[in-house]
Amino acid sequence: GQNRKIESLKEHYFYGHSAISKNRKWIYSSELMQSGKGQISVRDAGTLGVLKAFPLPTGANPHELRFVRNGELLAVTLQDPSLVVFLDPLNGKIMAKSPIEEKQVFGHITELADGSVVISSLAFTPEFFRKRAAAFATNGRWVEPDEQPSDYMPSSLLIADPAGHIRSLASHPSMLGFTCSAVSRKNNRVAAFFKDGRFFGVWDAKSQRALLEHHFPEGEKPISVAITPDQSQFVVQTTERKIYLASVINPKIIPFDMAGSQLRQCIHLAVLEA
Image 1 (spheres, one colour):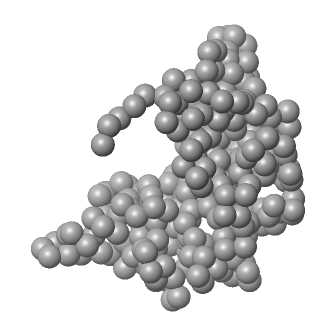
Image 2: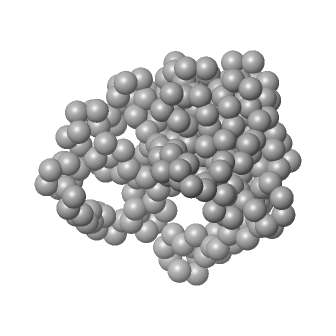
């Protein structure tokens, strides 16, 4: 129950996410240097001291990292150029990498049953990248400009495997802005939301068939997605403090009643790990 602060390396700052090794001994974090180049730092989970750092010569700006293949590999999303790489978590060696179109700026990843990862990504306009370059030139260090709705372009969902292969799962004009995904490994189904497009969908990862494409009304935006422990329902939360369920087998958006005796169950569902 004790909170401890993890300090970034000198002249670095945290940029994205952390992951804990299967043996619970090491913490892996994405860190960015003031120059914009990134690396993965490895810390002792007990002392929080830095044990080593893995440079990322294939790209800058590491964002999310997640252990896959039962902890054997570490999947990391990068920017500039956009890549997803699979690292050996013991020595940082890049075992596979998959380049994507330059416009894709990776957001978040989730793992399918076969060790592949689903990538829910943002896409920015060329103007946004010009603003980011100008901010770097002005400040002499990496500074992200404030994102505006006009900075987004339609994005996509991608699937990358540890062999370096990558394929498109889905694309839609409403795939705009902040995004996350959740998967049912049992049924090979993927759910994802795109906040600024007010869009939520469910797809079959194998056939790439869209099973549900839902637009929330004006003023209501999805902000999180998770799956229940039995992998039967996707759980979506919106900016209006509402929660919706979508069946994994026959997806359809159903408002979840938060009143009375169902409140405890609702809270239980809402805090599930995506």
